[in-house]
Length: 231
Ligand code: ADP
Image 1 (cartoon, rainbow, N blue to C red):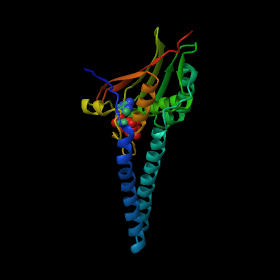
Image 2 (cartoon, protein in one colour):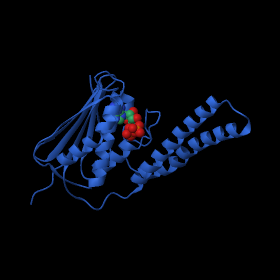
Image 3 (cartoon, rainbow, N blue to C red):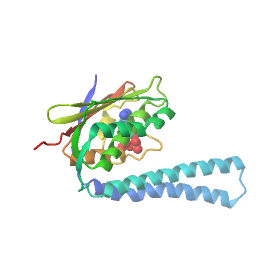
Image 4 (cartoon, rainbow, N blue to C red):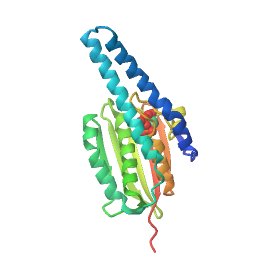
């Protein structure tokens, strides 16, 4: 039984981001400050110090991710759009994620037409979006035996249709309903900004996203993007 969920466009995202950003940055700062205080106050076991530094580094890295993705989100929707070959872009993005997939021991397969698939979008933004979806699929499969993510690009009369299917952790109904909302993340090092950003970019060019998922079975995202209108 797959659960279907159509994404409803969310407004006021930036207000929500601004409100919670301070919070997101303050928490790790507090943690790091606490560890520094511990190390500075009295002599510590070197193993403990190493542990404190390890946790602090993780906290700092997470803060960096939050800020980086916040900056992406706060940019106005790209004004500069051009015709891009989505098929070629998919090939390049998957290639860029090949080593990430290998590290997680996840097979990454790309099926795409040999002919160009023209859409109108901002090149940088779409690359970022593809990377987010591939990264999520790979992470969902991490630790799963025979973990596999398959990206399939097809065309119908009006749209480019990309499905990203994985046999990873899957999601329950509650998790599916929170997809794309700010700061929803089930990962210890996640920011929950990647999909928020991706949904915005896709909606800005008139596309839409649907998802079906089942816990412990896997997830399939379907992204539909209008094909470039030929005059
Ligand atoms: P992050 O990856 O930093 O957590 P995202 O916005 O990219 O943030 O994703 C939000 C959440 O959506 C993830 O933490 C995960 O719970 C869920 N998710 C996204 N893609 C998948 C997937 N392919 N399989 C299972 N869960 C997913």
